[in-house]
Image (cartoon, rainbow, N blue to C red):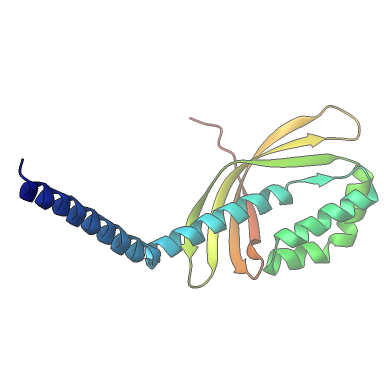
Amino acid sequence: MNPRTKDLGGWAVLLAAVLVCALGGWSYAQARGDDTLAYAKSRDAALADGTRHLARLNTLDGTSARSVESGLTAWLDASTGPLRDRLEGTREKDTAALTESGATARGKVTDAALTALDDRAGTAALIATVDVEVTPRTGQAGTERKRFEASLARTGGGWKITALDALPVGSGA
């Protein structure tokens, strides 16, 4: 191999490296400004917030008045709009009933998916399956499987639940 051929090979490798780097930079710039990426981030945030808030709305420690108050405050933090208004309106009655029952419930979302997302309007719909472990003051603890459909709205504090509907759990065919 003569020195001239060596120099051409080095330049060819350098040119190929520069082209690959330029193509990678261009591709990154295109993806960063892509509306699809922004939509995916919004979808992921709505799903994560909705799942977290749904678990919170199915969790409450009824062992003391203070823990019930704390739980109901958490419910208000997880909700907005009509659901929050309804929870605020029944808070006093709920506090008394839940403190008297003494039961504890712990909700865990086992599966969830967004069924709709309007990123411009800031609304979304979520379906989820929740296992709720209920421990009564007296008696035996048990787990209930529940299904919900939730409407979400984007707020300054993230996505929150505006409406919550229980769905029947199918018996299977």
